[in-house]
Image 1: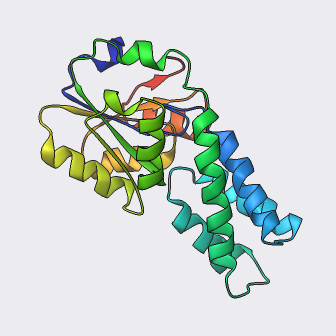
Image 2 (image 1 turned 30 degrees about the horizontal axis):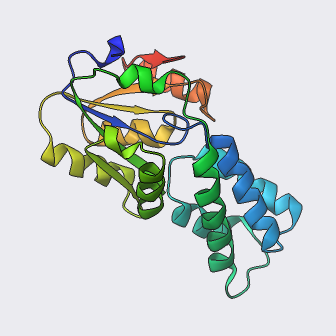
Length: 211
């Protein structure tokens, strides 16, 4: 069991960049989805930069934001086109994404109840975790379209004791803050390392550079 887990009865993990090394894979999947929908390269890159900087929010939020704010030529069916292509790619990449180094060793013999609260699509995430035999480690796996903060609240309502949220994105920190629980910033695969480290340290929370 990782020493940072001591003293907690409930531990909630983000998925991308924390359990699975999937952040860059998902950014590339979004880029491919935008290109497949004939979004111009400059706008597609602008969307991907926003996506990268705001990781952890649902794909439904991101694609809607792209269309409302970043893509000039909006046509009927664009939302569905981008979303469907991206979702198909995610199902494939999740099956091959590496587990973050030493994650399974870190949770071995952990006495806390373990949960997942992710911005990824819930049905997709549960299916992949089952296929990869990762579901055995967690009491509950929650994802979008419900917000991360609401998913954390759902977990806390059915758990007990001191709780910890572990994530690599600002949205993970905010989910912990909104639910008044401790936070641990996991940095190795974060898209916003400096921002998350600064936010964590300024609010008295630790960071982790490896499992």
